[in-house]
Amino acid sequence: NLIRIAYDLSWLDRYDMLDQYVKKSFVIYEPLLASNPNDARIRRDLYYAYFQAGGIYVEADPVLARQYLEKSTRLAKESVEKDKLNYQAKHDLAQGYSKLGEVSVFQKQFPEAVEFLKKAETILSELTVAEPKHEGYKFTLANNFGRLAAAQTGALKFQAAISNYQKAIFQHQQLYEADSNNNMGIRAMAIAQQDAAAVFEKMNDSAGAFSAYQKSVEMFNLLEQKGALSEYDKKSFEASQKALQRLRKN
View 1 (cartoon, rainbow, N blue to C red):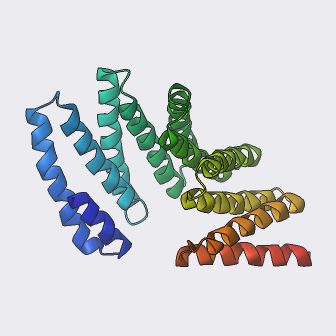
View 2 (cartoon, one colour):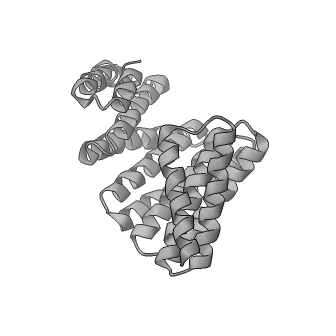
């Protein structure tokens, strides 16, 4: 609950207040785990506190975010070592690697980001094979493909980035087809198409860029029709529309 409050405060940019809630959660769970080192539930609760705290600080303080995420990832790795069949712990570990990759992209440490994200991909690919009906694993894998593409774009590996954006879009499309109420998937496809279009432009591929921007606009239109277009979405929607107009003129 403390981390949930901190997360809500981050959306309000109240970093002056949320830090106390983040630290209180550690004060509760760290001594508990020290006293009960084999308690898997306490270990995961502390993992979750560190993981959520890391996510909160990605943009506001990436150095602090990295510290928290490294701790969460270490806890997940220890859980996997204790039980190789603990799929939840493996998923936690993959999420930790993926989030560390996101932080590395934010810090422009692109080769390191690619390394983290490929570790996450390996684990998530294994999980989706082991549990093919688990949509949570598929959703995390789809998001990881998008993050990997962003890291490869930063590393100037444009063709690899396009390939992974396409994988992200394919995964999200499958999830949407399985559940037409999955607005997160529509949003993810809209953004992935937009990001892929920007990469096509870097490659001087106007046709590829136009097609991707067009698909992005289609996805944002669908979000709007479903009444799920947020204020943040509207800015991205407008950006794709303006890019299409610019390419038409050229």
